[in-house]
Amino acid sequence: MKNLGKTHYLIIGVWFLINLLQSLFTGLHSDESYYWMYSQNLDWGYFDHPPMAALLIYFGHAILPGEIGVRLVILLLSTATLALILNELNEKKDLLFVSIFVFSFPLIHTHIAGFLAIPDIPLLFFTLLFLIFYKKFLEKPGWGISLLLGIIIPAMIYSKYHAFIIIGFTVLSNFKLFKSKYFYGIIIVSAALLLPHLLWQIENEFPTFKYHLVERSKPFQFKYVLPYIFGVLAMAGPLTGVLVFWKLRKVKIQSPFQRALLFNILGFFILFFIMSFKNRIEAHWVAAIIPMLIFLTYPLIRDDHKIRKWFKWLALPLIALFFLFRIYLALDILPNIGLLKMTFYNREANAKEIKEMANGKKVGFFNNYAAISNYIFYTGYPAVHLSTPDYRFNQYDLWDDENYAEGEPLFAIQSKHLNPPNLTQMVTGELKGFIHIEKFQSLNGLQIALGKTVETDNEFEFNLTLTNTNSRTIFTDHLSEPVITLSQNNVELVSVPLKYSSEQVEISPGENALVQISIPKNQISEYSPVIIYTRSKENIRGEMVSFLFEDILK
Image (tube, rainbow, N blue to C red; front, side):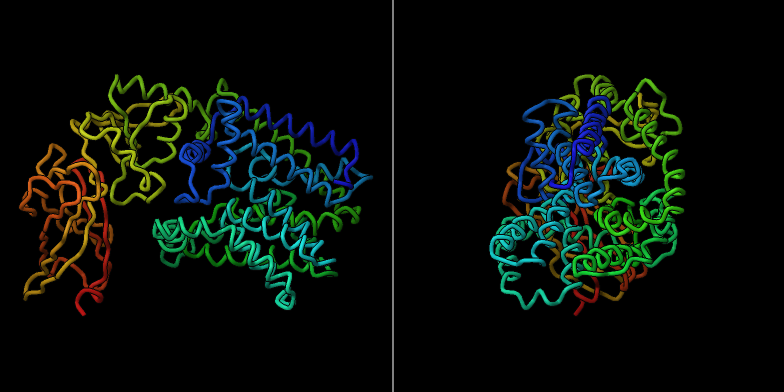
């Protein structure tokens, strides 16, 4: 931090105080409570993200309770991130303009140097360390700095998988690295430190990569492309972003380090532009390159007096609005106009409201990993996550939380889009419904294996083996009325009660049950994937298996 003076530290200190106050008065974002649940079950990996955020939340919450504890360590890292940015800009004269410039980037306020306990902040902190030491490595390579980079790179990856993109484009910008023995030292140290996470992925059958690379992929479409382009512009500032990207085109590369920055910026934009044809791209997915964008464009905007003047007058009103909006987020006494602050608004009150509505029953949440996490955080009581067959998989599918309510009556909350009964306006302003489950039985752990498929002139007959991998018995004749279902293109084609399709009334731990399910040929396509799953009468899914006809009819 040799480039920072007293005024820099004053700016950093005030920024820390603002974020601290924001943390004290703002309820947890829905994602933050989910990551807090991670921290209560420390592991080498999680369904959606690597474990760094969980570890940092664990340490912070161990020191202080409540929202501030969840955010404490990440708040310190976000402050350090701002300090590193200011240090690298090395601006000692016009501290007012450098402050305006940095704080004009919207994601600075939340995802980079802000207050949210999310993986982006540790990713940005370790990315900045990586860039600083990579620059030193280019100037004077050696085993010491190789060791440091070999530690920093796994820290980036353990924060968020976007780190792979940063590392990839950095190497792509400088093929001379392959001629350096120190570069291979970095690879060896990094690989050794990442081994526990790799083993976790193998043990859990690579859930993270399957979800992000396969399950989230959609057919080719244009509807997400324009929102992505406008989102990128807004990410650099709703008004000032145009000036930032205008100046970026005039950057002259004078060193391998600057080339790495430019490769990363363009690489991120192009990669996610391509991905936007198949999926919705969140603005913060490109947050990692914001400091790089700042480093390359700040000197050009600062030294262009006309552009600097325009930048200042466009940025100041926006910065004021950012701060006003943050105050609005923090104060639940201010109404949630148009549901603008839904993910923060009255979250504690909502959790306690649900507990009171349950009237002593155990609580379940349909298709909402954030809502259940929020409930557990603010009430301190366990709950059960319930998924319909079309809902995305998440970390709760890897946990065995269903045991908590097994065999018990359950008060289950459903969102409006599920068309639930008993629709009620909650304290957050959301409309929720609820159902009463008489006797909950989870079908998770009842694994499905596809056996011989018999093809006749008129139908297909699928022979299945159900294996109970739980430590509890699963009953085929039960109040939950479990069925085995065959679906295609999100449409259930046939459902057969387990008590009819299986000869067994109960499946004990470790036991198998043989099940048959048949369907006429004219009701199924041989050219689309087929999914078979178990579910209850409340449409709570169990295990699922998918296949292609071309694989089973060879």
